[in-house]
Length: 122
Image (tube, rainbow, N blue to C red; front, side):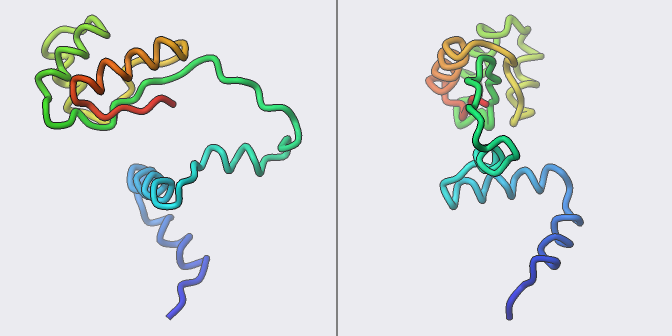
């Protein structure tokens, strides 16, 4: 039995935004692609030079197995209090810092990953 493109689109329409985001992430992982790259490559300005990104967002996708160490790292990186850092760790996926330089984003990612968190730079 074959599923049509219209049936797939109807299934997407019934999903919440978070479910669609999770599905896209799973598809990116399974097929080794990124949705953002596909949009850039297929856009109207596909032949134009792509401007280098200068601002990055650090997103923690999971606090991992060592939540206490991750909370400590969050407190040091953000200046948050214990309660706020704990809430942030427990609300993953969550943006830790937005609009920062590539170097700062990579350093923050390394610090959080050393504490046990799973982190992405976007």
